[in-house]
Image 1 (cartoon, rainbow, N blue to C red):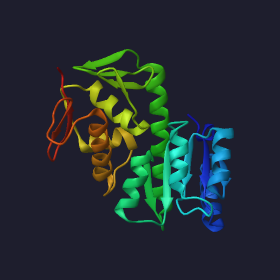
Image 2: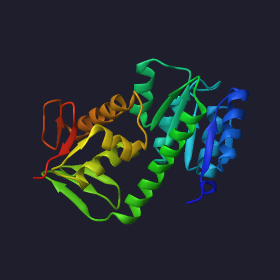
Image 3: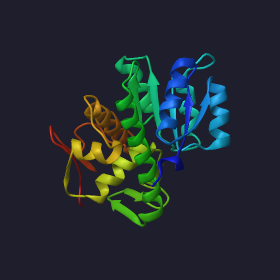
Length: 234
């Protein structure tokens, strides 16, 4: 599949970084849209429907977290945060709101491009799940409708982010089997770094909370400590 099929929206107010990222993406064959403010980014996002967003958080008019909230109300398009904020709470806040990945400035060109490719693999995987994987998964009162990408618990719809749904779907497709941290990370994000396990654990904690379980409650998913996760078979 040719890279130039993909359209990436870059929302960044620092002109030198915006120009650098745009040039780097275009050199690698991607179509690039740019925005300087959160408001402009929202307008571009709604009108152009990009395949991926690269988002700065320190925007001049609004915090970039506001963009994530807006985008997740409309779409599951992968969002890669590119920010100077390096504190763990900032990363967790962005991921909790639905960002798929988080890269801190200054960043390496090779790393950023790897994260972009990983994000687009999420996009393609979501399309494959939506178009190719049909039917339902049932475990006690948990139901996963693969075609509609809808999860319910006791007939109550559970609102998952795209990443959370992909993780839950992956575990359900391998029910009864332990999937290692690295296997899940490669399948969902395409690459692994020092923060990948923490990112997976944050997403898993969110999934458990949304499914109505607490640590130690193995109703649906078992955490094989130090190894990975396993979806119950029955």
